[in-house]
Picture (spheres, each protein chain N blue to C red):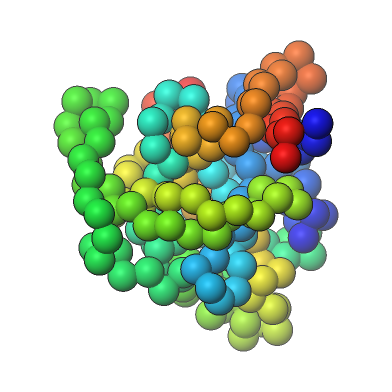
Length: 131
Length: 70
């Protein structure tokens, strides 16, 4: 089993599971940061990330997701290359112009590939894979 | 790149104070560009001589956004 570990960021004595991931759509890799969010069904990134990946935002499938205040936001799903640690694979990511939470979100869909452990005692998030 | 990743994690609180609500680019353990979009951040980093793929791109949350998320 292989594992990739990321230390938590900290803000006002609180832990923030914010990790670097690289994305691409055929060109160069772009490293952006995402909050590991077990409460999010989809992985959802800011539409500005789609822009630097040269993705035509509205060209692919659109879904609606409910956010914290009960409102719906549009999410446009696109398949991109993603790199976490040394792992590279293709994955469907949602991009939204209305994300509005301050972070890109790495949601439950990434949990299909990894066993994800939030180790608060050691202040790190661990991704384990059998591949 | 790994050094910049560690630097962002270690300096996250300071980044929120200084750049909350903005996009930043980090390379060689320092903030090399600031902007209102990621494309702007990349272009400014290139002007400073940084390779696009060596720049780590972060939308820095505001204090208020962190309170809501946490």
